[in-house]
Length: 218
Image (cartoon, rainbow, N blue to C red):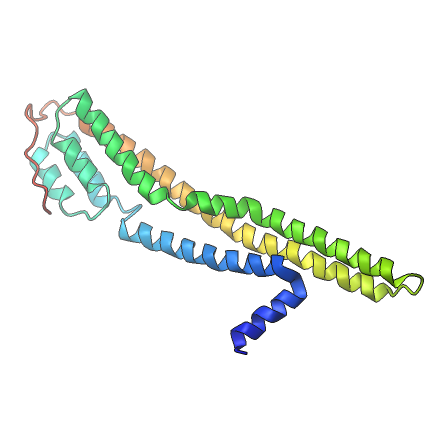
């Protein structure tokens, strides 16, 4: 028997199948969190220096400067901004840009529902394991009859409570990470909405009357 198998057997003996299930959930949740962090870094979430400069240049009426600055960014929002810059005040184009932005947000938000489910169900799963453990402990106490050993009941209770502790240990960090990821996506929506509204309604009077011919390669 390998070390991992021995460790799993020990966990199963101490906390039962519920603790083993929570351990598996924690491993999968950790993998999902690491993937989301990698995904956000690859998409340049929160890195809007070049995008903000491009939008500011467009707002001043400097169309070519805005395009040149936009090409310096590697953000996932670059295609959306290109689409907006290539349009005029066409309402259909504005709606298309909004839809493309929402599609990008949707891809980045995949998996957050799973984290939310883990954060909500892990404590309930731990409580379920505690209830099962308490039932087993009182069953042993009943079968002991008149020769009741207090240590038998105490041992059963602490083992049962172990599942509640495991559920909370999984749920609390998951909830914190979920709140952090959700807040980042909320900031992304605010930034994208303001940027698109600025592109389609700039303050400068020198805005080009014709849409820019935006090259699709960086």
